[in-house]
Length: 339
Image (cartoon, rainbow, N blue to C red; front, top):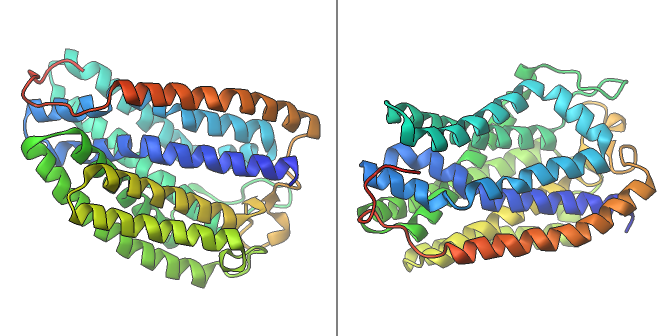
């Protein structure tokens, strides 16, 4: 396997890590105004992600940095062509962070509650829209630059994938809320988790059919590779695992099963697009692949050494934080203020 292929896999791993870890943060924020009915319950929702949400975003920053260093042409095309969409994501994430910090000191905390909601729901939707465009392909000019507009990105297929992604994060957020809270709040989270998982499964079937109809010319089709079939089995196993855990009221396994589903979906994306990182919509020869957009061999080699050292450290402190703050948050021991 070439170094460029190794970095293709590493970027996919980082994106999967971000989806699983920050996915439940985004889901909690999206559900926040609807399933929490009092200040105590709203604080319990914030406390459920308070110790980990900013650390979870490290995975997105690392994935962006890896993309910049390993595949600079892809970074340039995506970040310039998707500029408005990416700025919306960045400002939304800023709003989310600010809302969590400012709410405790604001005269009108409900304003910041809705900022928290918008700062969570909008990125969850736009991440899915971005993935939809990557799967569908984007118009790329002869100069390798994005040749469309912001409205080009809002095509029906990508919006479908955006809604699928939003539903996935809502399911994940509800699973985390069910795992971390108790009482009436937990019961509402359990109810939302069950419904959201059914909706996600139905949308996944629809999105799969739409993908098979629209994207049938890739050099490495998912159904034509062993890894592709493995990812299909992972997704199916995750869906079944989650549904069985929900039926048995097992909150931990339900969350893990949903995480497995998300990892499988990222794997399907990686396998289906390989070796392209940004497929060209109408002219496949203009696609940005691991072969025509990778950095020099020495750069990839040095970065790999850094990754081998750094990724285990990130995994270790992430595990430590989650271990330290394991257990449920309570609505009985909070006054509704603070973080």
